[in-house]
Image (cartoon, rainbow over all chains, first blue to last red; front, side, top):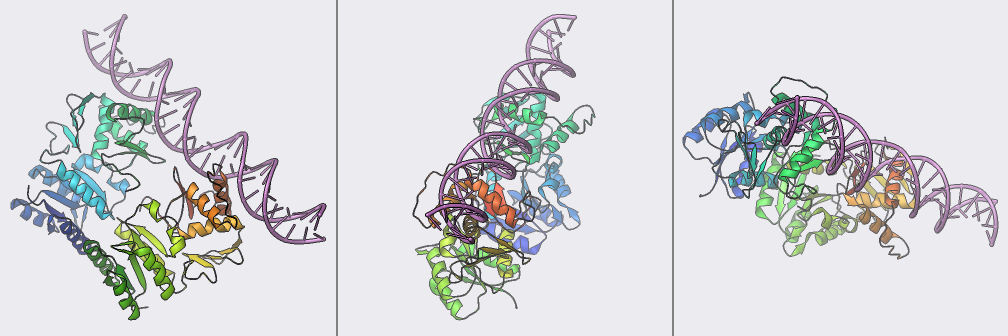
Length: 246
Length: 246
DNA sequence: TTAATTTTGTTGCACAGTGTTACAAACATC
DNA sequence: GATGTTTGTAACACTGTGCAACAAAATTAA
């Protein structure tokens, strides 16, 4: 592949300028766009490898745009959001973004996310886009809904139970975003066949469930790297290794 | 004051361009510089309100430059460092910067730091700069070494013991930087009159000391806001309120 | 100097948050 | 219905921290 081509969709001109300048200097070919129309123009011209899509686009809703882009084109999308993490959570599940990044963001982190998504290559990743075959992918981890199997980057496969599968889905749909136990439980309950509300899931079931999933997907479950706990908050799913020493 | 004037000292052209562009768009008058010579030129012209100084300046050492600038000019300095937090720790004490920010940084965070330092106004803040009178200031907190008194932003004064004073000094010299108990203990021991090494301070004395200082400087010591604990790491001193929800 | 006072360090206990195991209940399969 | 699997519950352990009470050390006053 020649220079990767990014489409930056952002209607705040200051933000857009900054992002474009930074990404160009980081070795990408960058096109700016401010609305659905301009996106389509670039897409028709077939010159985009990855879309960075702002969630707040004036009157247009980035999430809707994301969803419709998914149906039309086979292209990875990273959502850029100024909303608090809380508001973003769960939306990936509905909308099928490949990744998220919250504004204001660390430029290097943006770069890392862009590169990670591009690294995954053509094999598209989101639930919405490949919903017919129910294949989830996130940085190498693949879940095939039909067989309840998960494939690690190295090709190793593990069998998951329904509940474990559900947890993994929620996590895959919310990379890098810390989810509280309540949010996870809620998503799992919603996804349940019966419409059981179940409400205040006061127990520790999520903890145990997380422990079980870790035993299956972590190399060393005692020192989790993919499914990490955020003390006092909940759990985060991420294949990026983010040490404190940078 | 008219438009605040910032001097961005950064020899990596990409980084410099980004910072300059962003800060200009944020309403500052920005001048770039890449070495000590250029800094002096701008300083002589008397057109700088705040210096953003990269610690890694090719062959020149930013820390040395910081120190010498301190001696020549009465101007606040924010150190920008690509080093890991560990390497930065304690340097403020020697060098007298007004604040730090680690690369890669969140643009909004940089803005917040710049504004905070400018807000402090003329009353310069660092140990080195005012070492004759031993007045430390950080966002309103003032420590007058002679009287072992601390003045809060609201003018309220508290008396501190020697050890508490020492702790506060170390904290003031390392705003926003998480310090481990070992680092704090070491700094305190070094500052002691006798040259006692004391080595592996295995006890919990720092915890208790922190608790005592909290009781004096925190509005609600049970829910510390200024002197926060970073679980598994140590303690951070910061007057910025940084909630998770942005 | 000696006594009183203040400061500092130590120790033990409490507590929150999480991991983990064992077991019981629910569910699925045959 | 019997058997095996999955899921939830409960109890316990472990870690990191706050805190109070005490003891030792240092400082100040008499």
